[in-house]
Length: 209
Image (tube, rainbow, N blue to C red):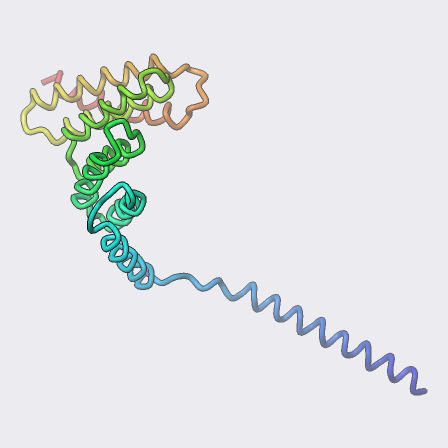
């Protein structure tokens, strides 16, 4: 075999070895999952971010409202709903009662905190701001109905529960009139139907007694 053929064989062998090595590297890469953040690391990062934002918003002002809004999200993730509600109330005082996004944030944490009476008041404020927009008004009525239902579940007396469930039914009926049957707001329709079924079931129990 002449020298030229040996060079060709050597070159082909090197190419084959390189391709095999590349295939093994790709296979190893596919079999090795991406490194996931551990639960401990996640909570550590969350705590660090909470400390940073609390320091940044120690004296709340219009200049650091965005940091305060981020802090509300951190509190929610940590199930610190009382802190979130207190901060959301302070933010609204600075932002103004017509700040729709801050009202919505406040209503969310009030519901999470189980403060349904305050949540209903906040949702009514939101409904007033949205009254010229039918799709938003429908969503507001669904939210009001849902919180009336939750409030009813928390009431002690039969009459209080019944009244809350009746108010929820009225809100769901109002929402139904505002959402066309061919609406693209499928999430709203699903929420309306599911929550109405739950509420009607509780109301029926009370009315039968």
